[in-house]
Amino acid sequence: MLDNMPRGTICIEDIEIGMTRHLTKLVTDRDIALFAEVSTDCNPVHLDEDYARDTIFEGRIAHGMLTAGLISAVIGEQLPGHGTVYLGQTLRFMAPVRPGDRVRAEVAVTQIDIAKRRVTMDTHCAVDGKIVLKGEAVVLAPSRKFD
Image (cartoon, rainbow, N blue to C red; front, side, top):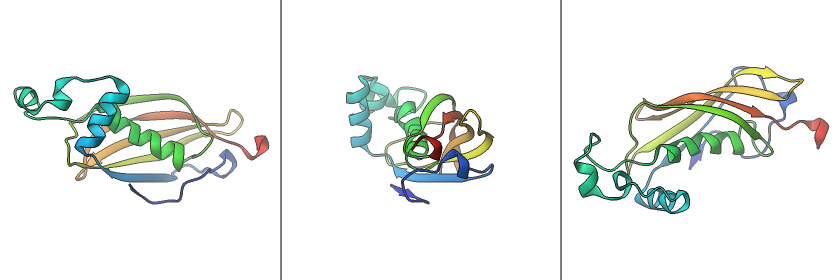
């Protein structure tokens, strides 16, 4: 994975509106197979090229939640990072992700409630600049007061 910042923690006291972080990941056949195994979602549209060819996707696609998991990785590793707790996430799937696609997952801070330690972020994933997933996340950020 390629990302723009080191892993770790940004405490609520240091987060600012407009902060962004991202990572880029090449989605592989192995990723899809492992996600199917862990999630138990073995829908043939993900695993069987012959089956998937006859669907509206005209070929295999990655699980939508695999793609959404990249957003979780940015939030849990970079912004706010380690110690962050997800409170909610909306997702809207705009286009399929296929094996071999390079996905860029990005988050951007839009609201901060320091008293409640809540951070709201716009989230999206793109392949070749085309948005494939968009949404909004609300998280509980770590604080230096509770170290």
